[in-house]
Image 1 (cartoon, helix red, strand yellow):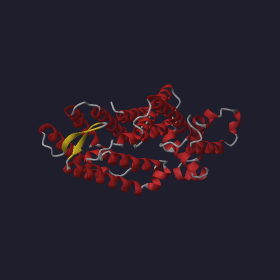
Image 2: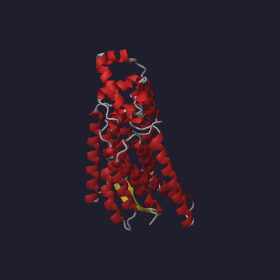
Image 3: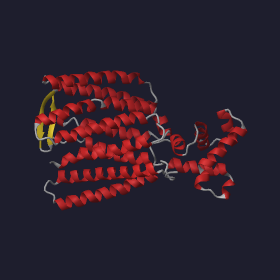
Image 4: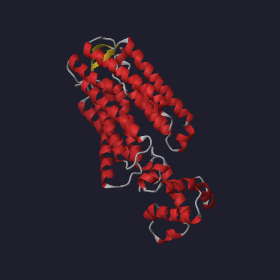
Length: 372
């Protein structure tokens, strides 16, 4: 079996780690549901790719291609949905993409069942396994869908760039670009270029990074701790496998012992880097979500914390929220009990708690404070 087989397997590992943490979050952010669907499709796509390239005959490989098309063709529309959920835009531009996707999948199913060869030319053998060779019509149809979804997605993100930056979600735009590069490059063998599709490799790398970012700041419960451990293992295996595949690609005659050392070393290094990102670097989740999910603050309490970080004093906060001084004091007392009183339960905290709370919130926002 070609070592390339382990690339989509590595992507499967990383995808599972992301899904595990998405399902472990106690409350769903506006982007969480769309990311769950997106990663479910990516996970199933990479599973089908792994099964397809490991088959020994074109007929067996084509069956897994039949399954793969349902998930792979859905990715552009799911990426668009993710962009919409990030920016809060209307879904009206999503429905044409969904309708187009359904038609495309229907045509692909007819092509497979009746052997029409409208979209698929043949299953082409490569040194790393079987991969489909598409007809010009299929390439054009997929390109149109991708261009539509990419165009609308980036239009939304550019329009809301300042809001994404304020919410701490701007790095997602960069990851989004690399995701699309991986998808486009995966179409190279489909168009006749004999190269292993790099899309699963991009998925594995980005998923390992996203899993690390998602874990930061989660409440230190037994379930969360176990998920972090499992996710870190998946991510490190994925990155070690990628390193082994790259070494094998550059030097096909590499000694098996050297390959094992490289894979093991890169896996351990990736695990250390993953833990560092998970503990000390910025999270994909904005401060408002972290305060509600991990510190169990109410909406109003989290809003007060945001206003504090904006530099507003007590009177300005009362005016902005339309509450009285007594109500604000009650909210602040509740906030102290859920935040700084947990981390610094000494009697000295009674001195200038508001200032200490502001410092505490700044540490969360900058990633210095890792988790509750």
